[in-house]
Structures are given as C-alpha cells and as structure tokens.
Length: 423
Image (cartoon, rainbow, N blue to C red; front, top):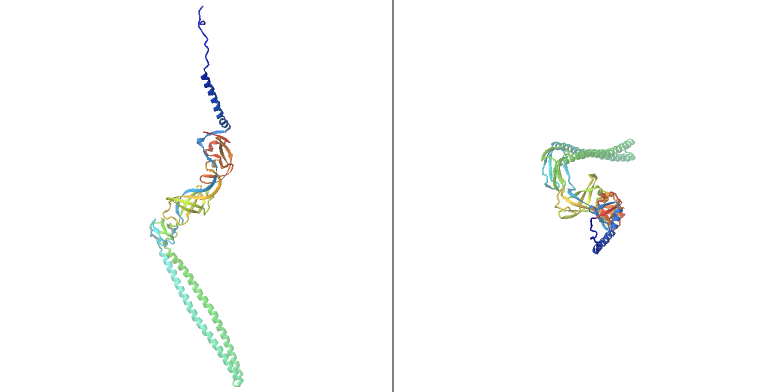
C-alpha cells in the first residue's frame, strides 16, 4: 500500500480582503451614478429617429428687434447719357477727334462731305428766290390794278355828281320856262346811268381787291412752303458737321478716321461724364421688391455716397435683373466709366420684428418648418416665414424669441421628426 500525503495536508482558511471589497463597492456605486446621469440622454437617444453630429450643423437663436432688408451687390459705373451719333446723309466722313478725347457741347466731332445734298440745297434756294420775286411782283401788280379801279370808281363818283347837278339845273330851267321837258328827261337818264356806273365801279373795286389779296396770299404761301424745304435742307447740310450733344468724352469710334459712310451709319459715341449711374445685377427673387426711387448707398475709393434707384430692367437674364442707381446730388468727379463700386439698396426697415439668422434651412424646407433644439434634441416644428434680407429671415409663426434652431445642415436629417444632436 502506497502512502499518500493526506496525513501531512492541512486546511488553510483564507482571510477576507477588506480593501478589495471596498473597491468593488465603490466601483459599483460609481457605475450606478454614471448610469443615473446618462440615463436621460440614453433615453432621449433611443427616442430620436436619427442622430447627427453637432459639428455638421449650424445653429442660431430667434431674436426680436429691428429688421433691415436690403440688397448688397457689386456694380459698375455707366453713363446715364451716352448718345451714339449717326450720319444724317451719305458721303465721305472725316473724324475730328479720337477715342477718349474730352469734348464740349456743340463741338464738331466729324464732318461729312455730300456734294449731292449741297447741290440740292442750292436748287431749292433758287426756287425760293424765284417764288419770292413772284410774290413781290404780285404785290406790285395788285397795287397797280387797285389804283386803276380806284380811279374808275372816283371818275364814276364825279360823273354821278355832275349828272345830279345837271338834272338840278335842267329842272330849274324848265320851271323858269328856259328848258324843255325832253332836256329834263335826258338829264334824269344821264343821272341814272351815272349811278349804275358808280355802283359797278364800287363792286369792281371791292371784288378785285379781294381777288388781288388772294393772289398775293397764294404767292406768299408758296414762297413760305418753299422756304421750309430750304430750311430743312439747310438743317441737313448743317448736320453734315456732326456736333457733340453734351459735355463729355468720346467713347467708341465705329468708323475709320476717314471713311465713306451711308445714311444713318454709326459714327461714334459720346459719354456724358456729368451724369453717371451705377448698374447692378439683382437676383430675381429680390428684384420683384425693387421700386424706382428707393434709397441706397454707393461706396468705393474710401467714400460713401447716397443713391436712388433710377431704372429697373423689365427683362430677366440668367436669373438676374439689371437696375441702375443714380447719385443723389452732384456726381462725384473722380469716377470713371466701368469703375467697380459697391451698392446697397434699402428695401425695408422695421422695428420689433421676430427674426433669425438666414441659412439653408429656408431653401431646404421651403420656409415651412424648422428644427428647434432643446436638450440636444432637434424637433421638426412647422413655421411660417416672411421676407428675407441678406443675413436674416422674418419669422411670422411657429417660433418664439429665444428658440434655438438649426439653420444649416438639416439636409442630413432626411425629414426625421426628432434628431439627436451628438456632441
């Protein structure tokens, strides 16, 4: 029988480790505390439809205060008055200026030589001179004929008076027995005949005078009409000297310094530097709120000037509308054509308006909802927005002052009702 070591073995009782027990108890308590603190967040996380990192989002707080709605854009200086000059008649044109030259109103910028037009003027002037002679001759003839008719009328008056005197003598002689009744009757007939002649002479004088006046008037009207033709041709000849309509600067030249041009051909343009405006391109969404007369500011070169909207194009090009802003008051002297300036147009200004910083949430939701953030949970909330400015949007319904919302990045929410914001 083989001996074992059972007689040598001895039961050893392990003594309890108090320090380790305390560590276990402390760890358990800490775990319970952590679980208690994290439980609301865990519960919120499980109640959300999705979770998105806060680093991918932008937030803003709804505020109440003044609301300024404006448009800010870059523009270029353009001439409000930039006439283009044309050839009024065909011929050989010679430019007297170069592009960029300063010019004065009335200064000759180009000369067109047109022998045809000058010859036509000479012909019409000759016709006018001949008509003037006819008009003057008609006046002389009228005076001569009036004189003859007046003489006939005067002679008829004398004959009538003489016949009346003769009848009176014959009647007296017949009463005294010195004349016969035949002589008295003849004297009566002579008086009656003289009266008829006088009446005809008077009528002839009146009618002939009217006829002569009509003839003179017709000659005068013909001459006046011909003079209008001459004056129009003279104007065309004068316009062969193409003059500047404004004080300014020569812009673009459309022909060579010496060239043969047709009627109505473009010659050159003149820029009126005393009437400059700033042309800006405004997004179509803002253009519908623009109106002529709105105030604004024009800035550049370290200066700021007041401006007024002077024109708005009715045409939309590439989603933009062209508008012009003129300087209120005198035009600054240091500006140049096509110079770039900054323009700010004031559309609206109100006090005590509920607004929030503008973000992509307006376009993403169409302004129909926003995500309100509370306790790191973004909740989809129906809203109604009003007008927008460059950096703010008006809130009409659904939000209150102090609400914190997500203004960009909501595309990652994919329309979820509740989204957890992970820190």
